[in-house]
Image (cartoon, rainbow, N blue to C red; front, side, top):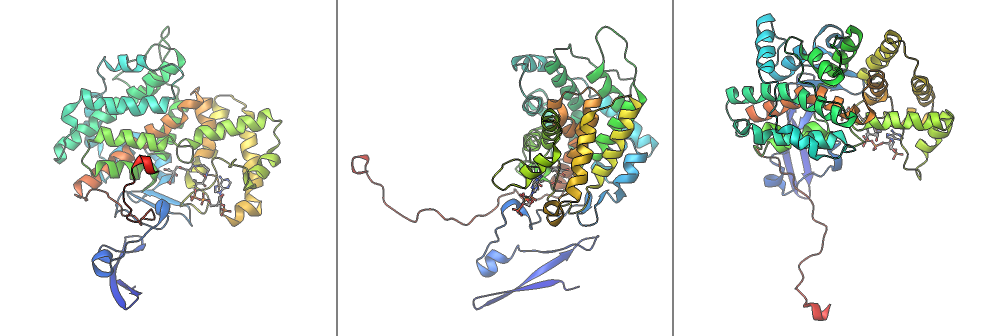
Length: 427
Ligand code: SDX
């Protein structure tokens, strides 16, 4: 395999190194392009541009492969705990019993947030979108944990990591309780990570809390499936904000805002709203398929399509199966699941979707499970953020430890050329 690419331009011929990764993906290293040929590249949406070398997550969009640190998503979703996967993503190896115990205990001893955070939550209107609240609270954590801002050593990074791993679920749960008008719950250190999240989210003030094993298994699986996904929009945001050496919490807050968008993590909420709209409209999926294909109609089949996967999103397969299992375990018959399945069937046989390789993605079925667990639809993207937290942390840590330069893309200017100021009396 060649280790260089030659660019011929005007009377110039410049050799550029080609790097190849552990899964035989190759990239042209263009670091010498400006100095050697006075050229930059341009690629709106970075559809063909790599921002970094990373050892965390591998995707093969054509084969529908997703692996965290070399382990398949199918195995991890089936066999691992979310905290094991968090440790794997952040530190690179599956933890042994002692390592996991230390990690879990360090997180537990950081799972209380300053009481003044409640004043910030109370300042929000009840109808505030939880993603906006969560982004604000995550950034506010910086003020309550100043030692977690300027972290440069691995030891200081670890302290900031266990702090946010401990406090983020509290912010998520308290944000949800605010939208429901329920008193906040402080959790229980005797429960494990996911069990504690469940108590803070679902515990009722007038009764004891018991962890429902079926719900816990579903949540554990969903959090693992959302844990990382290489250089997606929100992760790239975390990396570029972190590259200015803004603290971890500030970088995560930026990532939460990026995830909020309906083209990204916000799609899981948009999918449920779309399915409900189809149900209320009489379940005429064909009508909505036509809308999705109509270039003059802004409607898109939410939960379908992906920048990288041009095959089934492996996570969608697992979540679709889990949706059937959870609804059966909980004895719920949700008509929107049937609508989702008929939409999927129609799309997979429709040339518009087949030609564009548009398949269900991670967001297509996840909302059906969240809803069956009693999670409000506006909280679906917050659940995505809860799962993605360890991936964002891992990517931020890799960028900082790799001493990557501050992210600062170039541009091609297309505006007015030099002109002189004209006094307002002459305009
Ligand atoms: C996530 O990047 C990640 O890894 C993200 C994520 C993660 O884990 O972090 O996987 C999570 O964000 C999943 C995606 C969730 N978003 C949605 O479900 C929203 C609906 N999907 C689309 O908006 C779209 O498919 C994107 C945003 C996901 C991908 O967009 P691209 O890669 O920029 O593709 P495109 O918009 O250029 O579409 C290519 C063609 C276009 O048609 P033509 O102009 O070629 O005729 O496909 C069409 C699009 O109009 N198209 C759709 C469609 N998605 C793409 N048409 C109808 N419905 C859709 N959903």
